[in-house]
Amino acid sequence: NEGHLDHSPAFRLPKRGVETPRERVLTETEIHDLWHGLSNGPMGTRMERVLRLALITGQRRSEIAQAPKAELNISGSDTSWTIAGARTKNGVMHRLPLTPLAAEIFAAAIADSKQDGLRPEDYHQQALVLPGKKMEQQHDAATAGEYDILRTDALLSLGHDTLYGKTDPKI
Image 1 (tube, one colour):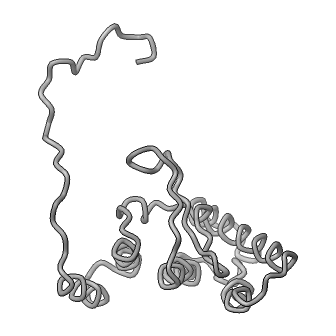
Image 2 (cartoon, helix red, strand yellow):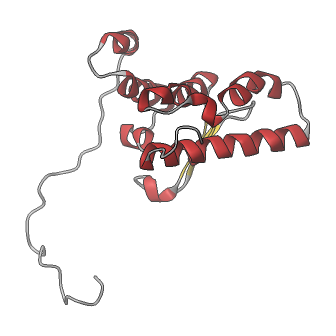
């Protein structure tokens, strides 16, 4: 209400449906079958990644599919995903540690940016993927800072170019 109405026009209308919490839990066999069946499904690589990440993280499909790259810290040893409160069902920011497999799946999205007409090398792919292993063994603040700047630039640039397109392929 922005001060335009005294009451809601939907007042006294019955709710369209009853929200009930889900109680169904997949069995180990169902999880196994789903995981191994995803690569054979008709949905494509992007949806396969979303569903794999849903299994790994327990997050909602929409939160995964709509995750801005800026929410992800997918390099080094402290990989995490910080979901903004505005995007969560309860409105509270959620920081989720990522397993190496989850970080790898998110990183693969950058590597596969070529499918969107973008070049992975434009997003520091070599500088981010290869040193990531080395970063786990080093604790040098200068190296970590440089790595963080590269990662931030890569994710912001990829997000921008994916959303708005890349006007000059030489840039």
